[in-house]
Image (tube, rainbow, N blue to C red):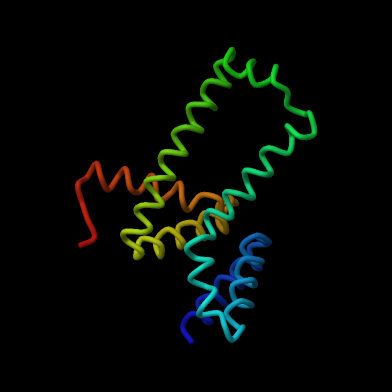
Length: 152
């Protein structure tokens, strides 16, 4: 019963803040939870959802190439500008942070609560985008590692 209440609060805050992504996500999870076989499917979505999301994002990123909005010449040009080089570096950094973040989430699931709360606060009050929990967990992993702290 607590999960229904918690998800309802998230939905309420998302609607109040006019954040359709978070509102739709909360509605989808509430809808999934309402189905009789949800206890079988929710863990599958939890475990594989990030990979599915990355797949969808990757497809969206590749669409401009398919539409010939980005050419091979553009790709080569990226390595000739400081902005392009910084973007490549940041892409590499985010990928590495995300890898570590996924490990952190798998090893210490209690971190998920804090990350979700931080993401909700960032989305609702600072007009952020809820695309960063994995990256946030990667940054958390780096800070936790640097400070040599653990949850055990």
